[in-house]
Image (cartoon, rainbow, N blue to C red):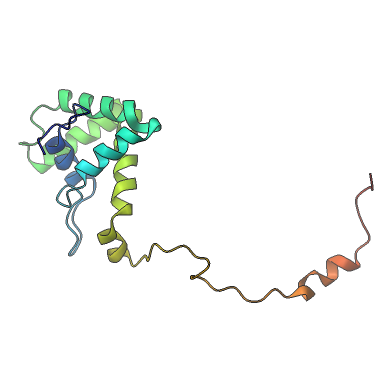
Length: 148
């Protein structure tokens, strides 16, 4: 796929470099940009009404303010990100939020943090059988409400 997707003007290379700084590598898990999440972030942002326009605007604004972001060193990239967050908190938040959503959906992250991703019921956390005696004291109380 080309650097720009067909439905947006978001440069995947800029997004991947940004992801590398926002969510760096840890132990055997690569940074978010190196995990190849940029395409999924762009795809998902296009499908979510709450992200569609603001994410495209955020990435466009970030790229136009920081035209040399990809070729900058880590310290310069971090400074650019901090400045963008400070000057455009809503736009920055849209980038960060959807990046986290996609990152924490990834099976590699699930494995790294030890999360199964399964729903708790019916196969997960088993509950003790209900003990009716728990309500015994409440049943002995006089009603403190008015019948209507």
